[in-house]
Amino acid sequence: MTWLVTGAAGFIGANFVHLMLQTRADCRIIAYDKLTYAGNLENLAGLDEAYPDRYSFIRGDIADTEAVEGVFAKLAPSVVINFAAESHVDRSIHDARVFLETNVVGSQCLVDACRRHWLVDGTWIPGKKYIQISTDEVYGSLPADGAFSENTPLAPRNPYAASKAAADMLVAAAHHTHGLPACTTRCSNNYGPYQFPEKLVPLMIRNAQAHEPLPVYGDGKHVRDWLYVDDHCRAIAKGHRQSHRSRSAGPGLQHRRQQRAGKYLRGAQAHRFLAPNNR
Ligand SMILES: NC(=O)c1ccc[n+]([C@@H]2O[C@H](COP(=O)([O-])OP(=O)(O)OC[C@H]3O[C@@H](n4cnc5c(N)ncnc54)[C@H](O)[C@@H]3O)[C@@H](O)[C@H]2O)c1
Image (tube, rainbow, N blue to C red; front, side, top):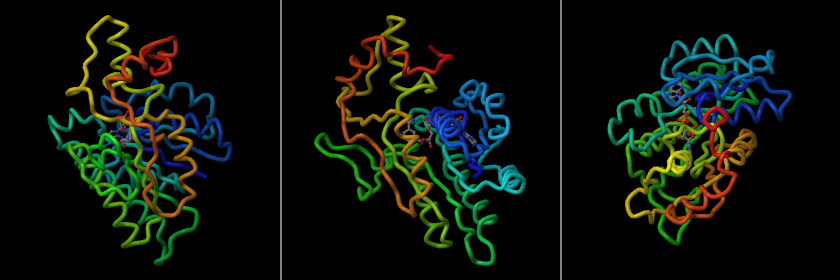
């Protein structure tokens, strides 16, 4: 089975590609990535040589209809998993435009390609699946004593979250209108190898190592839920067998950043949070 993995050079995408190649001998991976500031080919280093028949990389934009069409026409993926996104909240507050282009238009562009290639004479070819990787940020702020579920109303609070919610709605619309075989996951914060250094956990580790201040957002009392990236990737790998619905993924353990910051930074395990090339 051929999987088109978009955003494969980013944090979660790269972890997913490694996991799939290591654990699913029957899968062939097309890693597709625009290589923005957040994409790092080093995250996929060595896969060409290790899996010459099962892995290939293509540099491209998910919002480029022609490029996406070329991939579908040539390589006929059976599963599309869309990790590609502009994903940094602070950047979206500064300038939201590229978030709409990639997260909203790009997702629609992938969905359209699935429809063009998988829907034949009004019938979807069996075994196809589109997986949209969304975020629990579409639910807005978590109350101190609460937890999100798939039924929590959408209430995005920043342009990044709003663009992800818009993409979720477009995927759901394609499912309801055309019958697109799709699954949307809304995961909590991930941590683990290959994460871009501007994100909270690697940033804290780096600053601590450099004896620099640890920046805590607001009063530090925001509630966050954390999931190890490998657990997330394993859940996604199973998700492609599910029928259409939105799945939220998280350990259900909310932690105040203030309390956790110290814990993450203690001990010799800190290197687990950084990509091998960033250690
Ligand atoms: N990191 C988290 O904690 C977290 C939590 C929940 C959900 N998510 C979601 O998971 C997905 C992956 O997140 P991440 O942390 O790995 O992000 P990331 O920023 O590390 O990686 C994003 C990747 O997408 C690529 N990309 C950006 N625009 C593109 C485009 N137009 N076309 C093709 N590729 C493009 C980048 O080059 C990069 O490699 C995102 O959709 C994000 O919303 C992330």
